Image 1 (spheres, protein in one colour):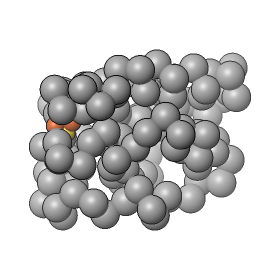
Image 2: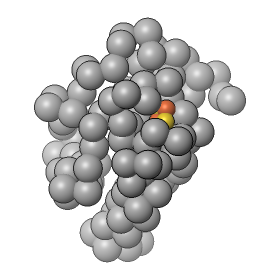
Image 3: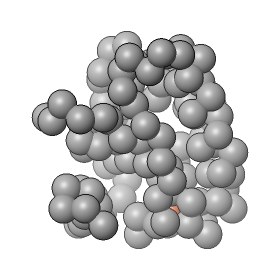
Amino acid sequence: MSDGPRLVYVCEGGDCSEKGSVELFEELRAQIHDKDSGNKSNIRVRKFPCFGGCAHGINVVVYPDRCFYSKVTAADIPEVVASLLENGKKIERLSGKVEKDVEQITFDLLTTGF
Ligand code: FES
């Protein structure tokens, strides 16, 4: 794992935004900021155009952790924040919903830059 920032990407594609991803992005960012106001954890929350797992949205990807969370709702945000800031554990119940190649393409893309 690199020493760079951890990046949390929230999909802002059509399907995910219809399910509320824009609001989820804002809320996730706000809750991370509340719990880590000095940003000691070096987490950046970003928008992503579309991961290609649209049927399973809202999709949220954590890089370089290789977490691909699907069907994320506002109710899941505290658990995602705790995972990012406190326990570092992957949230299994939100994982593994998209096809493996969708995950792989996403991680490859994030590794090589886009
Ligand atoms: S719209 Fe979110 S993965 Fe495509």
